[in-house]
Length: 348
Image 1 (cartoon, rainbow, N blue to C red):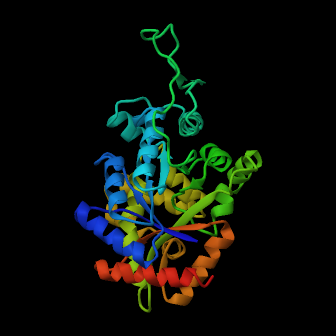
Image 2: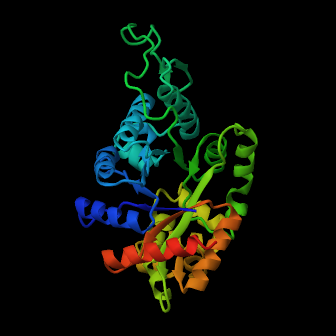
Image 3: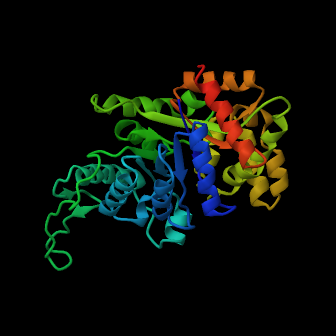
């Protein structure tokens, strides 16, 4: 299993990259560089590329509505060049609050757009002249639109690779099925080994049935917060505020993807209660309503035996790569936790 983590630069970007350098030595394989409505991810990815040697540098994730398909492909090719072939293009639809509220673009047909974007990106990396007449993207622009002067073009540079891995952050059945069909990696949210088949099994199977047999199996990233050692269980409570935010308050009451996933994971009553509490302003009560059972199943926090059991469960559920956060009190502690996890993973 590869080990990945999200770059967190709340304490300073350069400090975060220094930590990635140390985590790289401790066994980290992939770093996801976030982009919500903060600084853009590609600028940071280029900096990480210059400061690291072996880690895969993945956008985690680029919202597809914010860039043209060709620019997404150009960006990935550029980072792949700077990193000597270490880029992964992480894509996702984000949500209507961000896309319409920050980018001012209608949030429409996310799955169909992603499908077309994947096709266009791979065309660009193969240095083919980009010609795509889809429902959502027409390249070149038809002559009856714009100036009529557009013509098919291909990427000037020769990419390091003619195919760069594409990871998709997807949640709903249609988007997960598309991910299993076309993508190289899948980044789910609120994943627990015990509920994965019930929540996503049908969608993954539908997509896999349509997958090109020449494409490698889908890499599935999941895991949770890591704290390996005796008496660490209280650290699971740190996940309560974030879980309450997403389950209770991320999106409208009628459209909260995370609440739906949590409900399908075996907690329908808790999902409704958490949302009711959070949206009524009782955030602490919403945090307290997160089940202890969920916090245990969605983390890698506990003694080595417990963590190893969770790793086995994740692997049995189909997870092929870990996506983790590190609960150490300082950089040295987090690096030590990464090394401990690496050692456990290597014994599976």
